Image 1: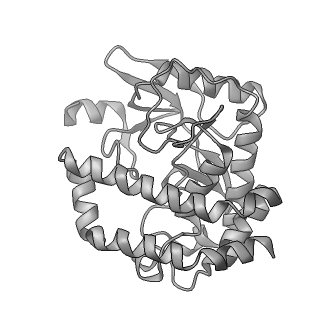
Image 2: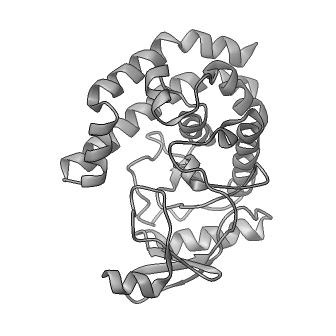
Length: 271
């Protein structure tokens, strides 16, 4: 798409790395590149509405030039560096509640197993529920300080609910060592306590709480591989971000920190 084409589409929306500069808002709709599994994903989004979940865009159509149109969801989206209002305990709690509502609706929807769901951030153990897999601050719409909708389902794939919660925790707790967290997040966030708040607001069952820290470690390793793959194919956005945020040493530090604090996270979740 040329700059002239983009201008015709409307206002370019900030945020996100996969489709940077290619998502446009015009009136009541958003137009963006369609993911490979767009047809199956659109069917899933419609089914979410039928099951009472109103916190996702409604698909409108696929265009002949490989783009998709969805309803625009008004509200506030936190962009990096993340503002303190998005990292309050009440905001975190609302994210957990929104994710639980998504999962309660999704678990009742049959997944199209023949669709080309992306595997980049997918649960390595698979599953029968479609996970969002990318509930980062840039993909959550807030109104009056409360998380009300999820956008950008491009990386959705079948998996376990606990995997989706682990991915969400990575971004919202965040599950990062203090030096890494300080790059984009407000200072003074208590990671063990915030992980407990997320688990409580989600309504995580006691038998799943002991597993969560280990799955977060697994999800972190998956995210590292995802970044490595993007860098290896010359993706300039991911290459620049990797350089600006400390390179592979930062990833090593995060993974070591998660292992070192696993017992603290587990104890706080089970207390």
